[in-house]
Image (tube, rainbow, N blue to C red; front, top):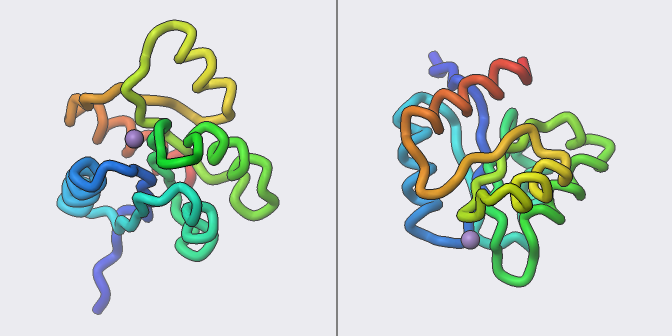
Length: 128
Ligand code: MN
């Protein structure tokens, strides 16, 4: 009998250690997780994986995570996917700029694990 996961999460994060950290943490919590370090193939991979939630880094190699958020949100099939932006920038101007991309929420790095997990749970539930 297959174990039911709590939900599917896709992580876009160019830093290998961060990607590994988020993936391990979320898998431990019972989520099915996959991800990529390469923002350029992220949309295609998300289309295949059809996650309940995307965690999106802002600074990626050669592409802005916020541009990817905009692209996902205007996509006919992916538009309702919940997105949490994970960012090292959280000054007032950055917050406005991040939220204007269309994401549901953002969380600042370095993350506080309890808050992070709680936020993930909240948005996974909203996508049910
Ligand atoms: Mn980055």
